[in-house]
Image (cartoon, rainbow over all chains, first blue to last red; front, top):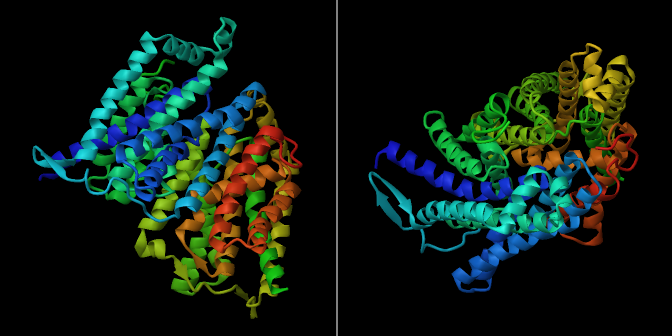
Amino acid sequence: MDIFTQLLLNSIIAGAMYSISAMGFSLTFGAARFLNVAHGAVAAVAGYAVFFFSVQLKMNFAVSIVLGICCAAAVGWLTDRFVFRPLRHRKASSLVMVVASLGLMIALQAVLAMLFTSQFRTIGGYRFSSAVPVGNGAITWAQLAAVILGVVIFAGLMLILKRTQFGRAVRAVSDDEEVARIVGIDTDAVIGKVFLLGSALAGTAAILVGIDTGLQPTMVLVLLLTAAVSAIIGGIKSVPGAFLGAYLLGFVENFGIWRIGSEWKWTVVFVLLILFLIFRPQGILGKK
Amino acid sequence: MAYLIHIAILVCIYGIVAMSLNLIVGYTGLISITHAAFFGMGAYATAILMVGHGVNFFVAMLVGIAVAAVASLLIGRVLAGLTSDYYVLGTIGFNYIVFGILINWAELTRGPLGIPGIPRPNIFGIHFSTDALFLFLAFVFLVATYAVCRWVAASSFGRILKAIREDEGAIQVFGYRTSNYKLAVFVIGGALAAVAGSFYASFIRFVAPSSFSVLESAFIFSIVVLGGAANLKGSLIGAFFLVLLPEALRFVGFSADIAAQMRQVVYGLLLVVLMLYRPQGLMGEYKL
């Protein structure tokens, strides 16, 4: 197993995991127009729900995953219905929304820690951790699933956004909420559905991370930062941008720490974000 | 009585941190979720110098202030290029990096194990070994910090800061280089947080990375928001209330572990409720 191949594989795996959550982040940012700090916490709900159903209740794993994604989607929708929608109606500034979502993140993480302790939890057991050799490296079944799922979800989202009535409404709201409302779109309902969808995607990513490396309440921040950075460097509001940004982040992160050690991983991520915000604030695919 | 003194000292320490953050949040309108990083720099500088090298508390504190001031100068320069939502994300990212360094740079910080056995302050033959004496010292510094913040806020410098908060474009027209003003107050805030950090290390006699995480920054931020932006007395009341809260929870009969999580839930929900119903906090003069 040579290190270059493995790094290449790790980059693709990381990119795939980030991409799923990042596309959700990008959708919600586009529709609701603020940086939703609670995104990672809502995602983690799905991971822990899977733990609850499959390990604690010993339910079928596939059923648990579906239920887990539904839980995250429901929590995401509730945050919009009872916090962000009222704020939106009050014409609150985006900073107020960010602070409210920060509060939600803190509260959700603490609730997860209370229910499931701060200890490390694993889901899926060993059934997905056998390695498949690829060239001179290796990849587990769970990781392979993440890579394929990432592409499938991307394609599915693009179809929804371009071809369906709902997708057109989402794009209209992303462009200009006020005008969308004037032409008769029920913007609250659309934004609610976007939260549902975005949170489901975030939850899917968290479940994959949970199967791959395990669950911990502190993962909420990692899930948030990777999704947010991917979406921003890709071009916020652009789903293809989020997808590309996630892979770029995966590559930069894995090759960036090749020589200097993994403790600098977050510094590398942060530097990438700052470089983009200063030199190309619209991201890879964003419009000015 | 001993217990009351213990609480009073914590209120002093968090009062200092909250006022120092309020300078940044209240007088420039920037939402910084990274204050625990500067707090931690002060605490770690004190811990490392006092335990490892037998340096006097006050000298160690000065070193901590210097470290935090330089760090806040550098990161403040970088963050200055970011606007509202992205600024919040940038500060969270910086806190995460500092947290990572505290955990990973084990030769200096002993990593997750933390540094135990930090002595109490000692000057001119007076040894602040009892809690009552320590409270006296902490209170003196609390008053001094209040005076400094008050002076900053009331000076012509402070007036320009408030003008920047209200309308940055307008004050630029008058020829003020607003980014320098924002940076200056960021550095003052960071340096003052290090003072509180020194007290924290010497009082608890133990420092570990988990005390300086993003969640801790969010806690400090919620003190400021609760008390009200740009109101120093509000910050003191906020610190008093939020330090007392976990004690009250323990008093009602929750275990220490659950009380710690409960307090996170309360802080989080408090932020959400404040944003929904009273974004200016209890006695703030400025709405986020």
